[in-house]
Image 1 (cartoon, rainbow, N blue to C red):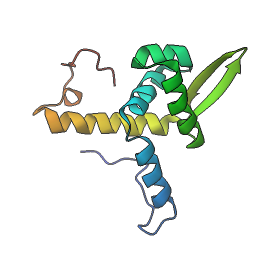
Image 2: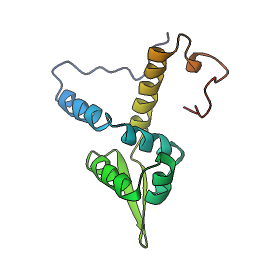
Image 3: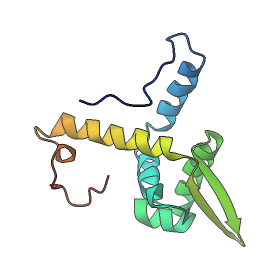
Image 4: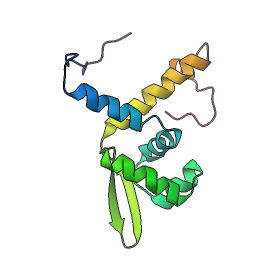
Length: 124
């Protein structure tokens, strides 16, 4: 296992611990994880995100509003259409690592450890 060049150096008493827990709570919803996975490729309209995650635009908008307050996504209005993008790469990386961990919980040999993906639609 290689060491992360940006390893966490925060102390257990860091004021960021409580905020980090809030971020994990925000990401504990499957729809929000799917939204982040959808936004990995870049900015999308609410209706496009809704199509990708198979939810109504109203439901997606409600999730995006919460994610915006948590500073996970940033909105942009173009006419009457709202577009969203990830604020930075950290939410994408958190979700990717969580899905990788989920693979370990399910598969004896997770595909992210091999050169050839074994699961259709896995483009993490």
